[in-house]
Length: 62
Image (cartoon, rainbow, N blue to C red; front, side, top):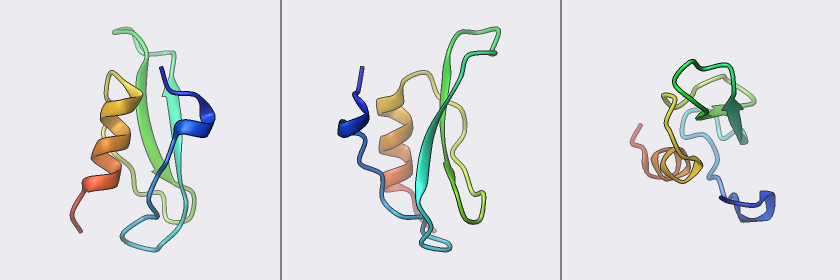
């Protein structure tokens, strides 16, 4: 599991806003993770591990 200091998110490709990692503990399929831009609200799909969602956010195309 990543510590807060290990989370390195690139800025949003749409507005250059900061991305933030969120965890959804309410999912009936277990914890899910997503990254959401704090400025424009663009987001990744919910994924099972924080590492997966961080990689998706940091390597996505516009």
